[in-house]
Amino acid sequence: MSSKIRKASHAGSWYSDSPKELNNQLTRWLSAAELNHGPARAIIVPHAGYSYCGECAGWAYRQVSPNVVSRVFILGPSHHVRLSGCAISSATKYSSPLYDLHVDTAVYDQLEADHPNTFERMSISVDEDEHSLEMTIPYVAKVMEERKNHFGIVPVMVGSLTPEKEAVYGAIFAPYLADPTNLFVISSDFCHWGSRFRYTYYDQSKGAIHQSISHLDKQGMDIIETLNPTAFTDYLRKFQNTICGRHPIGVLLNAVKHLPEKEKSNFQLRFLKYAQSNQCFNHSDSSVSYASASLISK
Image: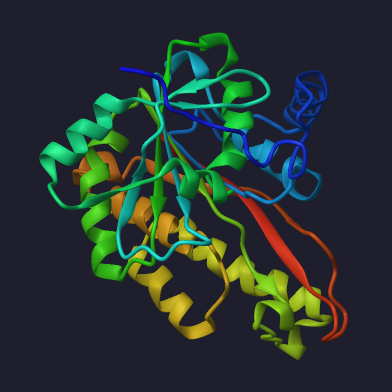
């Protein structure tokens, strides 16, 4: 099969296109994070520009044990193309300034064979327009560098799923989550606050606006830690929090839910780091929140 390479289209803008500079940044952020909730079976990571969220993201990636991982599933939301389901890439490689990552096309073939008409194929141009998958690639390359060329990635763009569809895709991915040689990377930022995001929820009893945002996000994070997809859906319906990766998170929660009871009871998710791009004090301000989490099997 000839290579179809998905270019690192956001390198040089959202993160450094210099291999040396990028490697030094990732090394610094990973070294500053504590290994306190690993080895991760799944992680939740932010996907903004690294100058905003690189340090926060490092806490999740720090929990990865590369020696046990042979395949990395990457689930990220679609910001530009409307999807009612999930889409898989047309690429065979994802480029990064560090090295190219190979797509495990055999898993794609298996998903399409086992679940006909359930996965769309996105073009490379659609793939390259989206940042939620790409922003995980340099970090995955870095933490997996000792196994370079000995692991594959399975990028999946997640659309605007109903809770019922989140359950369907969760059931599909559950057997893969059950396999400890697979790592799931869930790409999501948290609250997007401000008039430019058309979201200005403010609970004045929590203090300044940024404190209200933090409290709102913390409520959602606490619910995600319970691994209860229904409770997370209820939270989103109540507050409409602008968590852009809510559907990939929902798929992960449903994947855990569909594990055999004995396995499921061993899984524990914990948030490790939280940050905001800016502290909001008035309604002319805006910010995006970032959170990193790790799911382990005790």
